[in-house]
Image (cartoon, rainbow, N blue to C red; front, side):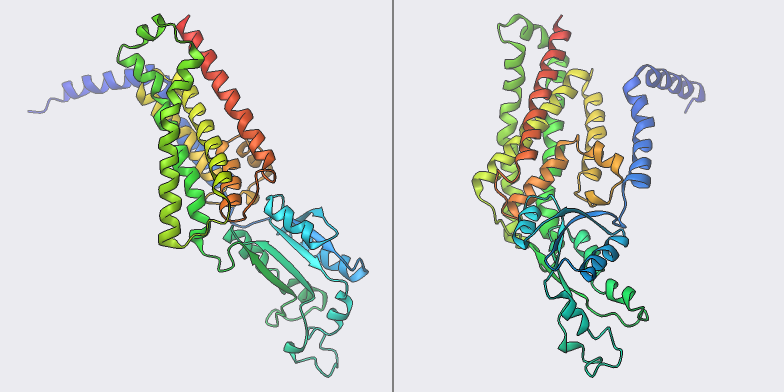
Length: 381
């Protein structure tokens, strides 16, 4: 027969244990708090202030007015100005901007012949006789960003000529680079590499030191002549090969099953993947030196994994997040890897074009390994 008294005794024991386990208690509070903050404040599907470039080849009053009206929508923000479309294409490949507005030299003539004018001109209703006033080139690898910029196709002329809402005239021609069909798989599959590696690499190594302690092997490691840095490096090398196998599976099957293009070289892909794997493993080692048991290491892994998925640009556009959140997201290795893996796989970006992300990843890895080594020494003392 079930005894309420014995149930109460077990309940009291669990509450006491929960109170003593500060890490678990912190996770109970922090995980819903972080989820609430991320989805309520950081995640925003209504894109604003997407960084784009401006190529104004006309430099007339009309071209400046067009640019001002486009920026007034607050969907985009001109962060770069270039003289030629080629410079803008390089900036898109380097992920410095997501798109570029190219205003041609004959913009005044194009505007005068636009059917939007409709003020007594003989061809006012012949919309096929005119050319687009300007041209957007867009990084189509992010489908949400591409859709947001495509929504601006008719806005400037509609506003300038005060046309009724039901008469939308294609003001801009839009060309989507890297993913002209706007297929979701092209955007998701490369990003999935970062999510899987973040989850598995941190999870594997976060229990590395804890496992040695729980199995009673820590004293043996202390008595060996192996240095702390050598232990850290030796712990992560096996998982590097595991990570490479995962990348081959994801990209290989993504190419075969979903026709995801692999435009970049295998050498560049190998370099950026190795950098991210080692950076993720260093994070796992730091977690392993902080956690007291494997349960705590898993809890801390979840604590890192959630922001990495939601703030890195995998599910939601990075450019749509508030500026303070973007600063925090820049501290996550997954954020930089999303740009690098999509740059190599979709945009055929070179290592030089991704030099900033590469340098950041190297610095993060060195810092992580040093922190794990120093923390491990402290525990040995």
